[in-house]
Structure formats: structure tokens, C-alpha cells
Length: 140
Ligand SMILES: [Fe+2]
Image (cartoon, rainbow, N blue to C red):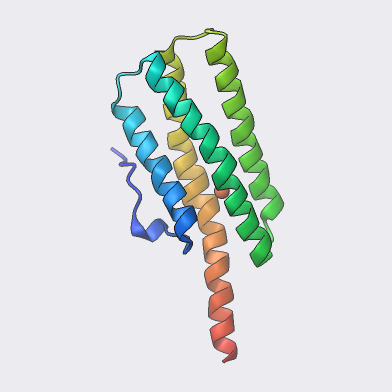
């Protein structure tokens, strides 16, 4: 079974962004183990909204600062996350599905996000930062 624990090798070299990522890994673990009630799901959705607002802005500012060439594609993925979250919130508010079912959908999406976004896309800008640093060292 894949474990969803943040590991030091996932560090992008920025404490604030690493802390955001650690928080999301922790949220996915909590969600996977929880008995999902309405109150719990309210809390999870609020935390995801806060995450999307604060974290994506931090990452996008960093990517602009370093002149990351895949900025647009990366921002596009962040926008897709925000749209997905809005859809989930609407479904939940309309009580169109049970909290249990929505919790399940959220859990599946986030597990995929950890693997396909954080461990793949975010690692690309991490590698870009590292290659820039290595380049600078070569010039010394
Ligand atoms: Fe990202």
C-alpha cells in the first residue's frame, strides 16, 4: 500500500511551501482514516480552500521569481484544482451526495494529486531551482 507521508526528499527547498505540502499529506492521511461525518467534511473542505488560496499563490510567486519556463502549464493545474474544489463544495451544499460519498471522492482525488502534482509537477520546479543553483556554482 502506498503511504502518504511527506518525506524529506520531497522538499522543494522552501520552508513555507514544504509546510503547505506536509499539511496536505497530513490531511489525506486523516481523511483516509476518518469516519466521515458532515462536520468533519466541512472542516476538510475549508482547509482545502485555505490551502488552495495560500499555497498556490506562494508557489506561483516562487515560480515567477525564478523564471520557471513551465509556469503557465503549472498554473493551469492549480486552476483545475480550484475548479474541482468549487464543484465539490457546490455538490456538498446542495446535499446532492452524502458526506461519506463526497469524502471518498475527495480522498481519491487528493491521493492522485499528491502523486501526479506534488511528486511530479512540483518536483520539476524543484529540479529547475537546483539546476540554476548548480549552474551558478559552475560559473564560480
Ligand atoms: Fe503546484
